[in-house]
Image 1 (cartoon, one colour):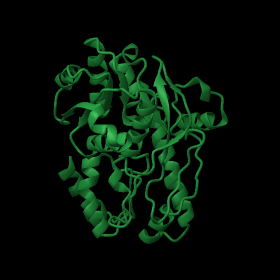
Image 2 (cartoon, helix red, strand yellow; image 1 turned 30 degrees about the vertical axis):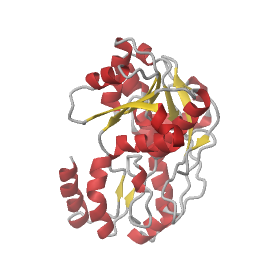
Image 3 (tube, rainbow, N blue to C red; image 1 turned 90 degrees about the horizontal axis):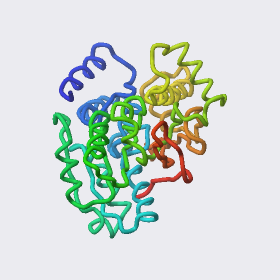
Amino acid sequence: SPPKAVELVRQLVEQDQVLFLFQTLGTPSNTAIQGYLNDNKVPQLFVATGADKWNDPKNHPWTMGWQPSYRVEARIYARYILKNLPDAKIAVLYQNDDFGKDYLIGLREGLGAKADKMIVATQSYETTDPTVDSQVASLQGSGADVLLTAATPKFAAQAIRKVFDIGWKPTHFLTNVSISVKAVLQPAGPEKGVGIISAGYLKEPTDPQWKNTPEYNEWLDWMKKYNSSANVADGNNVYGYTVSQTMVDVLKAAGNNLTRENIMKQAANIHSEKLPMLLPGITVSTSPTDFAPIKQMQLEKFDGTTWQLFGEVLSGAGG
């Protein structure tokens, strides 16, 4: 609730006098508080949304994202489609806000001159909609053979189920925010998600290739000690752990100089930070002119149990 977010953030800043905000969730709520925090020079760090607009140090020098932006991710899908499915007829299901629209923009950027010809149908949904069943049925009717679902977990699970139930078999791309096996694919019915393609940057905790590696064991030990009631199959726990490590590194770099200016300065000065649960070859980097910490991803396909990585680490930077 954006209005509630504004009210509570004002309380945190003015009454509790917090040093900064970390991992505030959701594109609409972060949009609502961004102006206030920047006006008051309060760091809004590593927000839990991949909207492209968090990388705007010139106009919003106190706000920074963390995960790869949705436009970066969509450009990576476009690169794959152009190379492997050059005659694709693409349908897009997207959330009707900055989150969903960023995928549409990134897909168009990635497809370039071919975008108008290749994208044959789009359907949006509101977060207040009960289901996306009618939108999925409408997209199937367009004759599309590729579907990009830019949806949050609840609606992504509905879309996966509906696509399967109506017998539609497009090459299905699914936004990274909805790839949790535990939170999305199991509720949808894992057999209904076989073959879905996404792009990842974190190690999927259900992927057997990471088991018995020092990095995975370090995470598992941490989970047992500090987060023992949580499910180790839920990738959101990997996300929370990894973004928090970036925050801890910023605090360590700030040392005893815990001013808002210095916190922001250190956040904008991260050089190829390697973290245990990032995929190999993916690092965190920022500068005073670059507020997009993670710019690389690797494609992955769901096999009914876990996500199987394929191809090389790709960059979606650039327009």
